[in-house]
Amino acid sequence: MKNAVLLICLLAGLTAFGQSGSGFGIKGGLNFSSTGDLSFENVENIGSDTKTGWHLGAFAKFGDNLFYLRPELVYTQVRSEYGFNNQSSGFTMHKIDVPVLVGLNIIGPLHIFAGPAFQWILDTELDNVSLGDLDSDVTIGYNLGIGLNLGSLGIDLRYDNSFSSNDASFTDEIFSNTVLDTRPSQVILSLSYMF
View 1: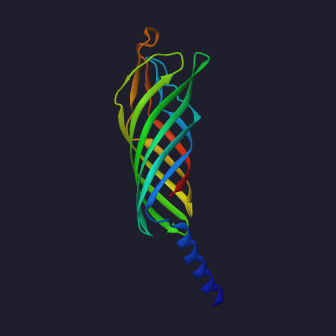
View 2: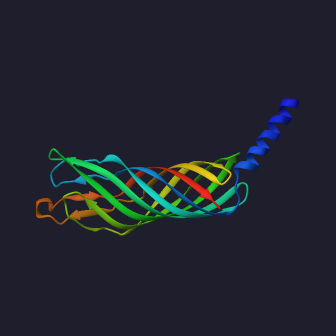
View 3: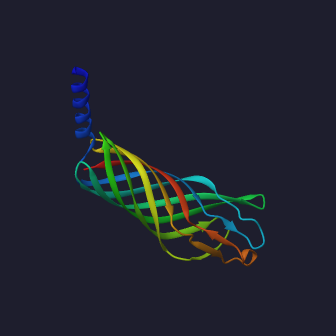
């Protein structure tokens, strides 16, 4: 009986410690990204290799001890690499992400979350190649993840992807019938601090 009471008190204490209420915060971290295929006319598609990028942003959190809403505003650099013709070319994308996450506090400091992510693409570059305009500068994706809050500090791990491809054509005559799917697929590791 003593052990059961002790366990209940411990779980209640962890729940109170781990669940921060509403507030605002900052976040930053690393993203491990790959992007869609590089497609040449009459040639196999070439997939990208994962590279590390980074992100920095702010968020607001609204909710109670069970559910919360967390909109974020994040500047993100996505990087990947393509190998073709015995060379490799690095791809870089700069974008603003606006995930709108709904979360569920599970137990103690542990929580899960998911939601749509609106992406505004600022710039795309592929080494030594001129890219044309993208199909769209604004895309919609999704985030799924798990996190741990320890007071004002938080850490989360999430998966981010887009619902549809977002192609860029090449402006160089050599690659006139080549298309690059710029859609990122990312595993994102973030540290956050809530005020």
